[in-house]
Image (cartoon, rainbow, N blue to C red):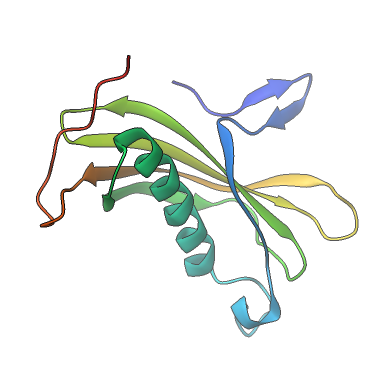
Length: 135
């Protein structure tokens, strides 16, 4: 399963748009860039939404693989987070999560980072439970 698709020379996001939010001044570091932790948090939320939909119930994040930041997010940018389920196990699922910034005023879209998140479905007591099979 490769990365984002390209159309001509333009890379396009892969997966379903799951979270869209605006980067605000309170989310910046001293240089005016949005904290990487804020971006990662938005990605975790998006992965969680996709995981809950797939597992039909609660999920928890158990791992994040190889996140590398490609470009900064600035105040006013709209962060768009895309998710795609790569594989599922008995109680877990692996979800590719891409974050893209739609730049303030220009509407230009740029990939910010991508990572693979692993979620486990849990029951009411917090124990792993089977993920329902797809029909």
